[in-house]
Amino acid sequence: MTTGGRGLHGHVLETLGPAITAGDYPPGSVLRTDELAQRFEVSRSVMREAVRVLESMYLVESRRRVGVTVRPKSEWNVYDPQVIRWRLAGADRPHQLRSLTVLRSAIEPVAAGLAARHATAEQCAELTECALGMVATSRGHQLEGYLVHDVAFHRVILKASGNEMFARLGDVVAEVLSGRTHHDVMFEDPDPAAVTLHVQLAEAVREGDAARAERLTREITAGALQELDVLAP
Image 1 (cartoon, one colour):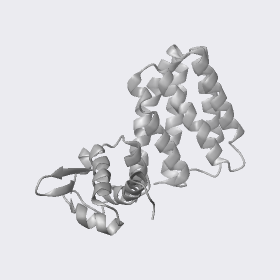
Image 2 (cartoon, rainbow, N blue to C red; image 1 turned 90 degrees about the vertical axis):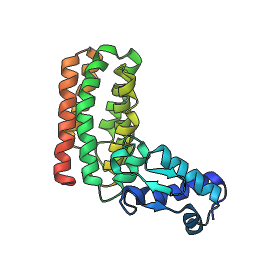
Image 3 (cartoon, rainbow, N blue to C red; image 1 turned 30 degrees about the horizontal axis):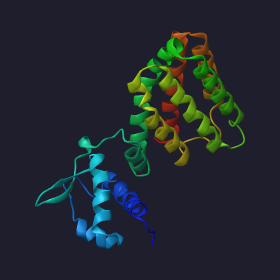
Image 4 (cartoon, helix red, strand yellow; image 1 turned 180 degrees about the vertical axis):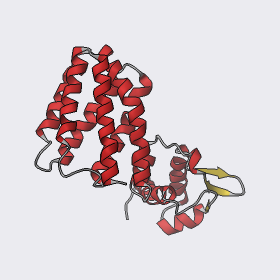
């Protein structure tokens, strides 16, 4: 058995968190920490630490004389990257992917337009480097390598917008892109048209063409939604 409190409570979370988000413990369910500690063969202090993390995600709440209660889905912190990861691993994946991709469709085009106005020379160089990396890994079933460049590209767009709220969504977008790859909601190779759009978007940002940057990003997110129609209906 793993030693060290952090490793143990992490093990508990990786089992209990996905079970909650999958609905194995419906809203209102009471989790008995003593029983869970016995089930996972961990101390009560480790179990309490795991519960504190779940509370920080608003998945559960502790009530005196009641115990640890599962919150309604409407109260969960659905922007928490870990919650996103757990939900993408469950039966709710198609709905979750679509919901998050619609969010991207609403946010990223605006962020790209702002990036065209505010990106620094260094950020423009980063975007170009990421786009070239996507091109280099777009053939030959190199999805993991492609993912690295794709995530980095969209993080730069959000950060270069100059809007701190958009920038904080970088982890959310990273989980969406990672989930698509790791749960086989991608073709064996990325859509060549989508790769080209990313290259053109990097150019539009570098050239300061906000309208074109926004339009290209709308095409990218629309394409992502169309892929979901095929791969995760």
